[in-house]
Structure formats: structure tokens, C-alpha cells
Image 1 (cartoon, rainbow, N blue to C red):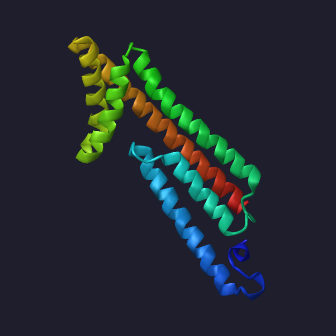
Image 2: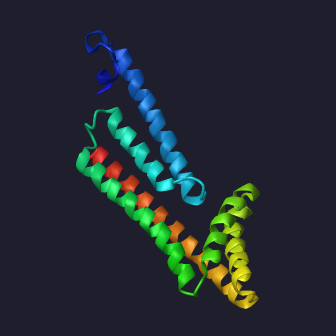
Image 3: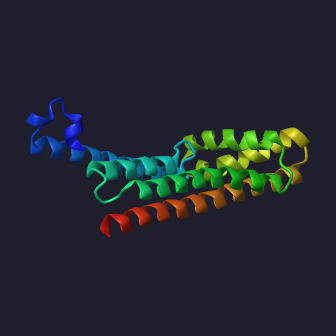
Length: 178
């Protein structure tokens, strides 16, 4: 695989292959770590970054340890994680009848919360959903319920994404060392 990156494969050296593999493994680690951080940070697409990192790691050794069937399974888990993330927040909000303004408030609160780390990560979506619902209904009790339900949905989504990423890493490691 590494030779496919060189202009003339006949003149490629083992050193060129090793340097490329090292770079791919390094990028893989960076993507996986950024993806794990992205599970908590709403601005980063956590699970897709983990998937890209695992794909790079498989590519670094020419797919000798981890092949396409495993990568397809990891891709399906990535898509499942994205679906769970959206559904957990929306279902949490809709169970208590949240308005669109509450959902937008959750989104804006999540982004603004990034600037007030670490508390803002957790308080931002809650305050955003509460403010959005209050803007819509002008009822503090209902707005508080919507804010809490949306926040709990986000926490459930976070826990499920973490479980999916652990499953992805476990599957990758199992197949790699099998």
C-alpha cells in the first residue's frame, strides 16, 4: 500500500514505506483521540472521527489485519451512532412537548457552552432549551421540564455514543489481534 503513494514504486525504499506507515498511524491516533473528545464536545463529530482514525490504521498496514468486512461493520456502527445521537435529543425533548425554539435553543446553547468549559458543556444545552421553550410559551415550569428532558436526552445520547465507540474500538482491536 505504501508504495502506491510513491511516484515510482520501483525506486521506493523500505524507509519510505515505514515513514508513510508511521504518518498514517500517527494520524489514526490523532483522529481517534479527537473523536473520543468529540463524544463530549458538541462541535466535533466524535464517532465519524473515530471511524476515520480506525480506517487510517487499517490502511497503514495495507488492510492486512483489518479488512473491508470489519470496516463496513464499523461504518454501520458509525451511522447508528449518528442516528442515536439525533434521536436521543429529539425524543427526550418531544416526550415533554418541546417546541422548535427549544431544540434550536439546545443547539445554540451547546455551541455557546463551548466557550464556558467545562461547566458550559453541560449547562449550555440545558439553558438553551429552557430559554428557547420559555421564549415560545412564557411558562417557566414547562420550560424547565423541557430543558431538563432535552438535557437528559443529550446525556443518554452521549452515553450511547460512548458505548458505540467502545464497541468500535473493541471490534477493531479484536480483529487486529485475532
